[in-house]
Amino acid sequence: MITSTVTSKGQVTIPKAIRDFLKVGKYDKIVFIPLEEGKVMMTTKQAPASDLFGMLKHRKPKKPVSVEDMEAEIHTRRSEREKN
Picture 1 (cartoon, helix red, strand yellow):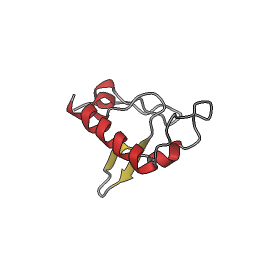
Picture 2: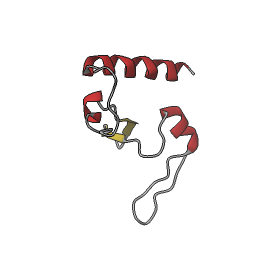
Picture 3: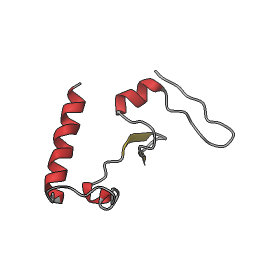
Picture 4: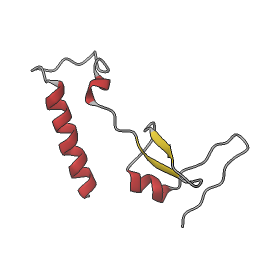
């Protein structure tokens, strides 16, 4: 069992073993889902590629890429990362 302490400000540090397990890092989003009997499920927030639109205005792709192609590439790379 891995534990952490709630600070006076209501903050909790997620232990490294859990961050590694969830594959989260700096600025990643965490979702808390209340369950029954005082339990909470914690997971990562999966954002669609369309949320990234316009983020890199200084870079123009040589060839336009559709949102569907981006989603497919994200899924492929996430699957590869989870295998490691």
